[in-house]
Picture 1: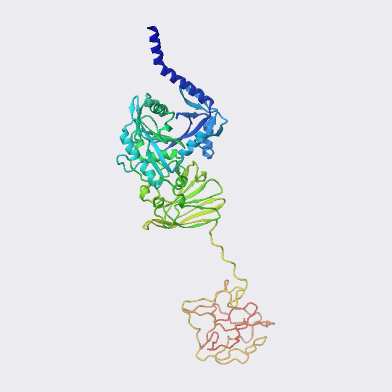
Picture 2: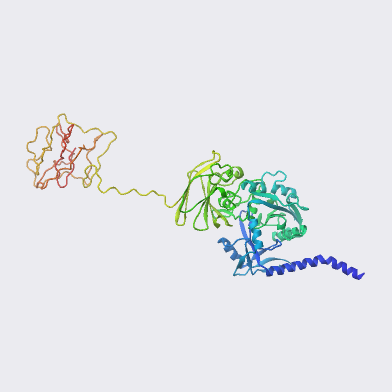
Length: 608
């Protein structure tokens, strides 16, 4: 009888003993094995965020990494030198929880890392795949002091649209990928219906999301007899009871698990954002603020079941590769000029206009140009609708890297930046959203596009004779011919002027400028003003008459010692007026070789 009682007691204790043995073995295994490191990205209701690091175990448990080694990991992430889910850390010192699983992994300074094992690498590579079928399991949680508000049917409808929900994780990823990524419910099992299930855990909401998360993982493994929740679906969403976590949601980068605070499990933007992290997408920022780029789903999330209806920004879209047949790369020695369409019109593109243009620099950080067409699958974009957007991201457009929205351009807008020591200019020539499909005409140039300066004038221009300080002849819109005297003389000058001009044999009518009988010992020159003025202008002046072969004013070889010019008055006039004066007699047909008035060493033009 006593033997039977002992046997019964041993039988009853066997599951407990087995569990404790497994935990101890698991603890020892974690102390001896490498630790697959993951980024945990947490989103808070106030729009802020936080990055942590965890040590992923093969059974799905996640152990927080703390210590100086965690700080070193954070620095590597900033430099894009750490790949979540692809690298293992060494030297973790696990801090226990009695005989239960450890809650922390202390990582000392002097971080040591290595490439993850082939099994882990293959799993993470599959998770990052964004084309084909992806199975998803939604988990409702009953804790010791609370439970998820929605039942499994409502959760299934909110994620897969199984009961008519119009906008959800499945429908929006299908729309944004143009049916290249197909989200489907996890394969049915006992107690998995339409991709949703419920688990019960002993943890309380007051224990926090870290304890609750690992409790849910253990419950799934036990309930379905699997070694890890990854055996149930590609991605597993934990919908925790209210008041369990301080954030609204978080996910592990390039991994399988995402965690939500109660109803956030049903909001399409939260779903798209966190599964986006599983697909290796980083945050979309603007102005240095995390999440502030609201042109796509990797910015802020919104507490609404079916809105906003939008996809991803240019950098994330390039990384996802859904529109790769309409990608265009412009290098530093190239230019681009042409039309672009939005990804929403990807299937309506008979002219093969590009959807995305990558401005490729010599570094891993590049610029991405996108026409953020506000229609169809992107009709609810919160920011930069129907504008050209320019985002910057590292990682060559293929790896995990936060993006920064730099510009939102309307028609006529222009953006400039510097890359590879050369200016880049993006100009939006026009945007036409009435066309089908809507198009934006864009130009992208490298280098200085300022026009070259005009060349220097020719050294010896030929035109009207030039004096040391010439002024051009004034021009009026409607010139009239020079005034003509009633009876002009035919030959106003002698054929061969003498070296020392005289006034011998003057004609009675007209006469040249009057000459004083006896020149003064110190003759006066023509009146000079500080800044000589051009010939006086009449209301409709005309330029000086031009003959076929004009000659410069004749110059005497030996000018007279004391030449005289026009008399000087206190207020000089251009030329003295006689009853019938002529400034310079003009004939209808000027002589072939007319000569101007004699010029002295510092001459002025003949008065007109």
